[in-house]
Image (cartoon, rainbow, N blue to C red):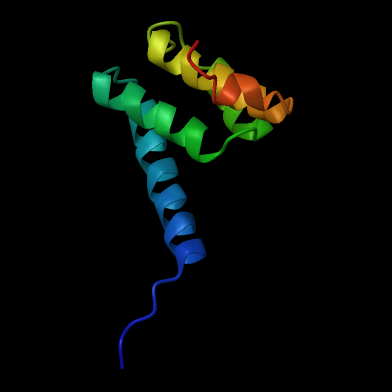
Amino acid sequence: ERAHFDPKLNHNQLLESLKWLLREYSAVEHISETRIEMECLYILLNLGEPQALMRSVSLNKGIRQKLLRHSERISLAWYLGNYARVCPRNS
């Protein structure tokens, strides 16, 4: 019998793995490009979730670079229902 792909289970496992990774980064207070990308991924996988946004804005200034702030703006726009800001059309 073929294994059945469960997208919900896959998403949950991805989030749990990502949370573990971010906790490890926080424990060593290591700032790298990879950490910033993983922080962005966490925000975007949790669009509009206050918990993810609060985590992000509480990070130190060294981590809150342009890419992370852009991810925060996208997630905040989603939270506020401003979908035009989430997926802007080019003029």
